[in-house]
Image (cartoon, rainbow, N blue to C red; front, side, top):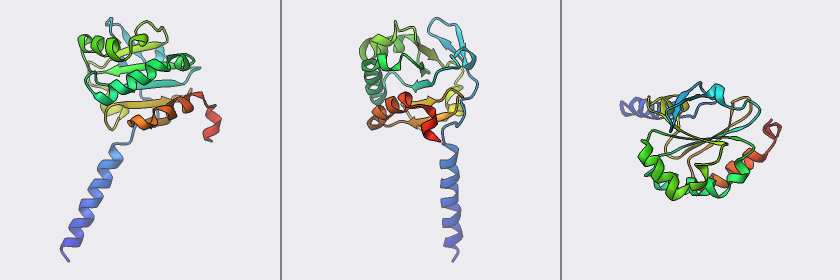
Length: 166
């Protein structure tokens, strides 16, 4: 009998911890820096566009796969705000872009941002790398994934009118 309350507590804590891992439903304010050390925040986004955020680590194999995918479909991303966010140093970012996403470097629609203050994880709450967020024009979360098999779905969500979700 004493074992049942323990199990209830155990599973309650698991559910609580899982609830804490849910990605942010509204895009938080943020202040990151570009690879040229210039500030970039939520107010710098075009308010009339959806936003794709790819949270990556340059050495993460899954992130490299996502980088190759979005590099291949970069033209489909042009109507949207596109942010690649990392906690890596510029040297690692250069490795990542050179080897997995070379087209994003010179695309004026894509911003590569560094999180030097370790702000992104506790506020956007990605579950793991790569954390891929699609936010609507009102900066509400339309879709989140960290699964490679759902990369195509990211493009579908970006292309759909936001009213389809209602």
